[in-house]
Image 1 (tube, rainbow, N blue to C red):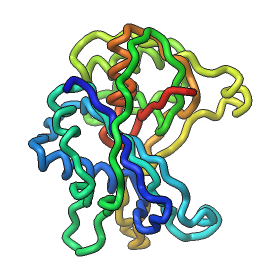
Image 2 (cartoon, one colour; image 1 turned 45 degrees about the vertical axis):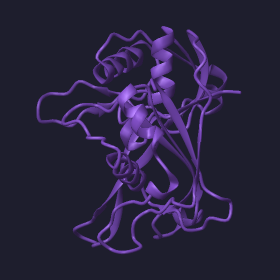
Image 3 (tube, rainbow, N blue to C red; image 1 turned 90 degrees about the horizontal axis):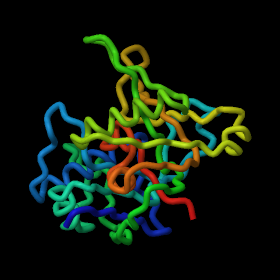
Image 4 (cartoon, helix red, strand yellow; image 1 turned 120 degrees about the vertical axis):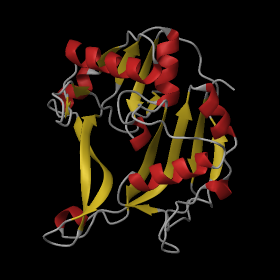
Length: 251
């Protein structure tokens, strides 16, 4: 098996698959994949990715001191790496439980159904939308955290191709063409933050989200057919194993 993309769907009646950050889903998927031989690479970007479709469980939390909670509706996970594709092909609903030392505290998706997306149709251009933000970063001096780049254009495309080359070990030549009408309608506001994990605030002793930023917009992506295939299956840009860069085709 060369490539695979899975849809993990929760029943409409589900009320228990609650997350505060994408870290819960990343932990769950990594643990499930480990059962079938996956070993996360050391200091190397991932050749797989995931995205989460969720709805606010407490939609008024932004007007209060309540932590933002989200109810998971669908998880999308995929790869164009043959070895990882074989591992993902073995996943079963019973594997979808996040490890946690406290009984009942881990994310539990064992009530989900798993289906496989149709095979990618080879093409050199496709219209996509973002399930999760697409993230690229600029080179930074040693010892400093990389800084995200949040504008479309030539520089973004250069950083995007550099990131994809680092992930897959070959040259990429992708061009992201933003939907101009959408960007205008948003007055250029196309960046979005996503919570990747929670941390304990030392002053308040409360759990607070750690967020990173990326771009969210509809766009056309052009490039070699294998480049678009990798983007659709394994995600586009950085941080795909943290939930960034998950794409779907515009219908």
